[in-house]
Amino acid sequence: MKIISCLAFLVLLSFASPLFAQGPKVLVVTAHPDDETGFSVSLFKITHELKGIVDMAVMTDGGGGFADSQLGAMYYGLNLTDSLVARTHLPLIRKQEILDAAKIMGLRNIYFMEQPDDWYTLDPTPYISGKNWDIPFIEKRLDLILAERQYDYVITMLPHAGQHGHHKTAVLMALRAVQRFKGPHKPIIIAGSPLSANAKPIEFTMLEGFPETKIKSNAPTFTLNRAFRFKENDKVSYKIVADWVIAAYKSQGAIQENGIHKTDFEVYRYFDINDPKGIKQVQDLFQQLANSGFAAPK
Image (cartoon, rainbow, N blue to C red; front, side):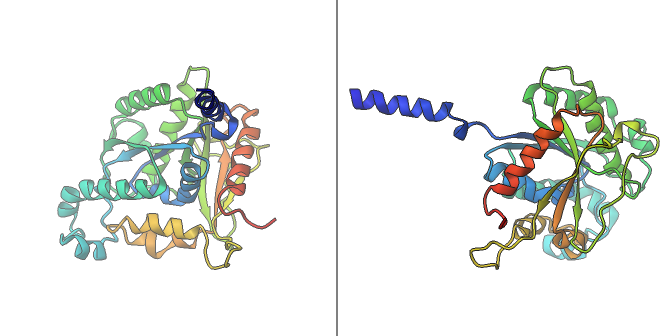
């Protein structure tokens, strides 16, 4: 009996120990299935190495993503380059693709907002105004998700001027949801963007006309290095995880051919609506990510 009691005590002690504490809880807010590929390695490391929780809220049904689907059309046996065929079949196809990608990244849940993925535009006005999207529905659902799930962080894309209007609107929805949050544990919201080693970071302070998108001027950027080679054999990097995620999106050709595989760093910025005291918390998170799993040589 004494041995059993000691074992039970050790089990209880292990769960009480910081070593077994719950990792960070994160909500990712994006416009389309595949938008999360820009920060897929951070999400993978949070769930697999820090034992955290990641959920995703996706604004659109993905039905408009047919411009680069020539190979996907052959794979699925559907003429996905035809807009009518695509808008009929792509919403279900892209839901399955993002579920496959979510499994790789270790996501817990995806909240589909089912807004129309109508056409490409840089202007967020038709969406944030409520003309093309059901903004009250999105607001109500995001408010409920944040209240129930009590996240530590919300991650969005960086809403720079060259971004799709859907992307900008998704960021605005996330920012405004965090602003409305009244609970004692307000999440910190940060914006992620991909960067290749030979490129300059995007210059961004605020999306014109939307002051809530302002980046805090005295805050550092936070960087995760995807590209360093593991010292065990110098043949493997976390870019392989990004490739696994990209490969789930058979209907989307351009993201595989272009920037995502070339991404060496994930760069995150701190929105001005956050409390300045949260900067240290984000720094600690990215230090944990840098030191977890296969850490880069010092």
